[in-house]
Image 1 (cartoon, helix red, strand yellow):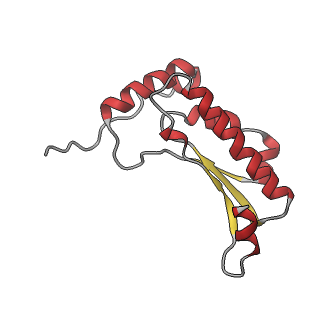
Image 2 (cartoon, rainbow, N blue to C red):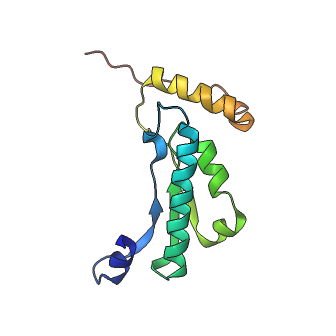
Length: 130
């Protein structure tokens, strides 16, 4: 409904759909919850596209730091890549909690051999004492 309202507005244009799945963490089955969220995002994007609600080639974006493998897998369909500009992005691009992400990256590399082959993972670049 929101996409329809944006598309009908003379002041706005619908340019894409994005999600932040990184908030789904810390519970059992969080990978399944992320996949479910991504499926809903893809469903909304496909319906909006079928209704012609986008202005130009639409953007499809997600990719929290600890689930980018799941996002890449769900968004990697070649037909989807032709229909959307796909942007895989990190949820924490400036600073992150090193301890928290050390745990999340360990889960990611256990889940994805490709991610494990990329190297050591995130490295702290800033230390703040208060």
